[in-house]
Length: 492
Ligand code: FAD
Ligand code: SF4
Ligand code: SF4
Image 1: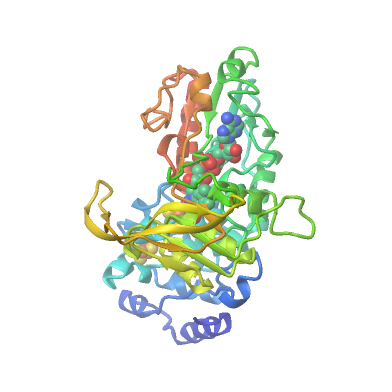
Image 2 (image 1 turned 30 degrees about the vertical axis):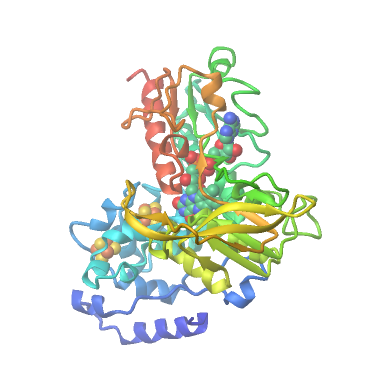
């Protein structure tokens, strides 16, 4: 792994060697700038961010790699359509404020999306440079450049103008990225907005799910402060569907429209014997204890977390990587990520898998947990694992795991974290039967407006898409906001 100093030195050398005018061939020959990061041996002992961000020199080199393609293929891969060559051009001109303005025309949370977007399967997947080099890892580092601009210009990010008060009231349920985007856009039109959040802290998965070492919480707090400064009200500890129903919000509390962005926070389990043992956690609970309740801060936090030595994490997505890496930082000596397919089929971002492995997590691939075994106190003492091989591709296009009969063996563990996915919470559906859902419990919405089957009620993010991504949730929040404003202005 290159150190931060080595990367900076390389950037300086490249900058010094660049000709005054660059041809596309020159640009294509510029080496891809690595992201400086904390040393794996050090970072497993702290919660600080792993990726350190580009310096100015590194960003300037990376920006020069962009060919400024006329047809902008990368933009088609961004769910909110950021003018990518536009903002990168501004970086090459050292006009960082200008670059941020271009990004902010389409995205509200660039410092967050620049960090957590799965760029390699979105904007960067379509990048001409990556295609020329037949390697998506060689694409222009769009997300890294977006993060550079957002971090550098954090102070200069302006609050949007708010139209005069209209007297209309909108309730936003949940406070994740879908709701943040919706609330901000609706408020800009002069409507009064109140966000109702079930937890004591705003931000959704950005606050309680994604760990500090990937997404520093001060960035999320800054975005939430901006919403408050825009006049958006926050009501914490309100579980809509129980404290107030959607109907009550509309008929008794006078809200003219409601946006539901309640996410997919209901953990799925494997339904194998032993899942009710003491030291079996859903990744949601484990990460919430650590991120939201700061259980890692053993000195000052009141929240306990199980002291683990040998941890098994079931699953192969981003959530599994986050749980495994958190367990290491909480002092586990061995963390095995048990996944039933091969590394190529893992749904987690490639970078997250690499980071987990660098930090010492073991990938136990083609392995299916079939039973969790407990000791006489009901605490996990091992997992029975069945070996698998890859069969034909399934509906997701990935090769499916086929269990190998007679291959079971038992591995010792004292903790199990189940990270095999999340479903939507059925509470709102149960108390508001007017809202149609599909068989998975996701809200069915008009794809153009995000309106549900209940008049005046809109929805977006994971509650509609199933467990998806931050940027897709944000995109839906913005789409719903446009439709809500149109509805409130009488243009249905
Ligand atoms: P959420 O962020 O889930 O927010 C929903 C909010 O609604 C929560 O705060 C919840 O408490 C609240 N709520 C629920 N029910 C009610 C109710 N009845 N009343 C009031 N409030 C309620 N995506 C990426 O793009 N990149 C990543 O790297 C990535 N990593 C992830 C890691 C983890 C551990 C997890 C869990 C998810 C990750 N995701 C990632 C997915 C991404 O975070 C989600 O797709 C996104 O947050 C969904 O946004 P949302 O606004 O729909 O809902
Ligand atoms: Fe790429 Fe995400 Fe930024 Fe869009 S928001 S340009 S997909 S990193
Ligand atoms: Fe630049 Fe790649 Fe987009 Fe072309 S596709 S404009 S090279 S980022």
